[in-house]
Image (cartoon, rainbow, N blue to C red; front, top):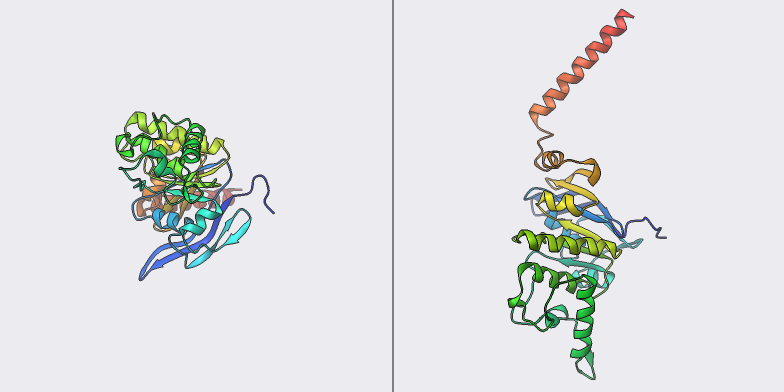
Length: 272
């Protein structure tokens, strides 16, 4: 039974191994409808592996995944897409020589009488772009003619074709200018306002803090930390990502402080 505030997607105790390399170990994660959850971590932290597990590209070696209140075992990306989990990878996978309509419906074309229903696809393309308040001059313009931000918009719009409940965005603002980045972040907010659960993978702390509701930090293939956006600073985020808050210097300082506190308490007890 799914409650109003229940996660639409959650994973518990997930592990993944590639030969001798333990890429993920005991990782847990969830996202609720209308919530933007940022997944951050250093290179090699396991972010991409986790996203590929949630999108059906990889199968976890252990742990469980629950979608919309039911435990699922994804056999591939197509099954994830059919369930309602859409993923926009960093390379976007757009065809530069095709127009916007063809890219939006590539592999999932609308047909009528055995032929492509161009009118229906063009109409629905405009509806999808309008839903995102996208600034695309024409749905018949080739992708090669669009800016980086507009291409990202098309890739996000394509993920909405199947009416998903969760959209995962892998580094959506990478290599974009300031204005284009702002445009994409606006799209992320619109997705959440439309009731979708959004998973945002990013190295840009400013982007994350601008749109995320919660931040999950992965470190060395494990859950490193979790923050509500209003309770965390950039310095705390960076420390959690890099492990600056868990090194021999800080561990020694913490131990010395605790020993000092214990000694003070013991001295006060003797005085009393």
